[in-house]
Length: 458
Image (cartoon, rainbow, N blue to C red; front, side, top):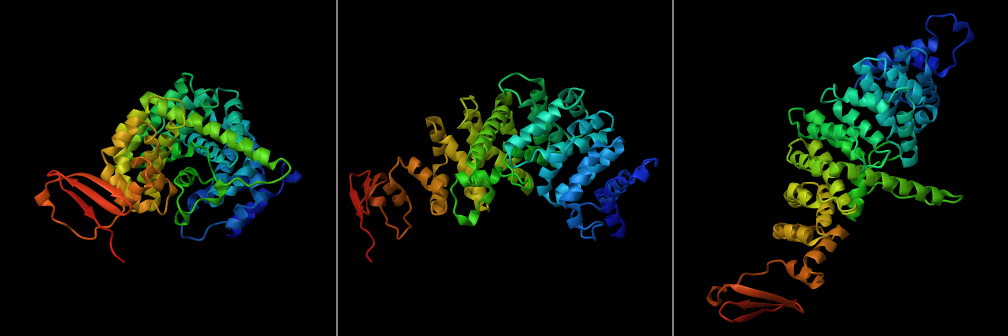
């Protein structure tokens, strides 16, 4: 503990003048040693950490370490990145402080000279810095990465992607795709095609479940919605669309804080930038190979891996929802073929109410056209039964019930009756029609008989 604290203190101090003649300055040496200590200790272990968490996440220490990214020695820059990654893992709020002091050019120059293992650390570091609450800030970092190197960073990443391991590919592909989407996504791009091929391949490769999970989590980050600590908010945003009650609590960070002195204009600008980015990423994903990513996500929804299932469900619900907002892509029919049965199964059988709410959001998007409504009626019994269960906890469930009942609320109430008793109607033949009117149920039978079910007496 004492050694770790001493190294932190050295990094926080400026280099002394008498250290100029030394081969390695005290701060650089401390960065390298602290990086090794933190790497060996890992994150989240039960053993006593080598450095107090409060010291690692202090703004002064984070900013001092970020300045070391401009060090002359490449190994010092890489060590500083590893320390900052540990700081982010301990408290994601420090991302903004790192971005303020970030020398992107020095980081990118290091990428071109280090080995493959360190290359991946740099990609992870840059990817983590993009998880910012403000979309405009994230796009500034993206542009700095794209334009801040003397080499073509996108071409370098493309070459690197072709030699990465399955567990590295999703992260590299995710960064490459985001860099490419800084331009109009409708244009043909070999970078986008290679990145999407890699992500789909990882999703489909059940021999590498870790790679599948990382690919799904990468896609889950594409909407670009994050909390101030860097937590992805895609799931919370979708649950908000389901209008669920308080027991499926929404993140307070989804709401826009209104203020004065131009704060409202800034919030509106950020919201517009976030919406444009979300449309770009969704379009790029669903338009690749006629929605091939949706087929891959459908396969992942059959996985027994709870983490993979949860991430894939968020991705599938988000993309299906976005299909209803994008210009006609021609993919909606393919999405129903891939996902409708799986989503109905989740709606009917999921253990967690939030999972059922996500399935509702996706199914509601399928109900926007006649073909979608017809496909859903194939599962109408299961859908209606579940929506009746959820209508008190979700405004979206009640809305869907009305749509499936031709807008008649009385029809909803009719199907919501509990079974009170049984009556033998075999002597009158099969039931050919049912009408519900003023609490009475009228049934017509094949022999011409009309029966009336009286309301239950109090």
